[in-house]
Length: 188
Image (cartoon, rainbow, N blue to C red):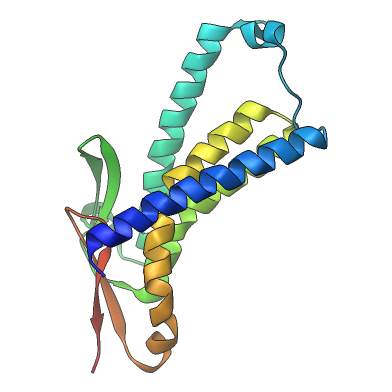
């Protein structure tokens, strides 16, 4: 399978995640976990004008995006010395897409953990906080976090078949700098 095929799979998974999230929102509304906003509440939410609320939402979304990329870095760099932590990772934006690139090879387990961690922290965790607080906008923020992890979920699904093999052979992952995914080096 080529990289393009996995990117299509990532888009497909993102769409599926979005549909599942909509079903969760509908179910939570039926169970009164999340209250529907009336038209008047939508215009003025908690005494803040709608425009200001949208701006705050977009800023929160940008912050979550930055946290998403830094979570990749924090999990991947765990256990490295200070020199590698300082110069071994690159975070930036390429074609309006934020990314985190590790310049050093990682073990398979570390690559999987670092790849899936942001989807859990900036996605599922935020959704659960929104459900507990009964705040639909926090839930929506978390759903954006889950959708942003679509490519990460695809990469983890690509790596999972190699986990059994990693118990018998040494497998090293090299992160791709300009593309989605990683290169696996498997010991003979």
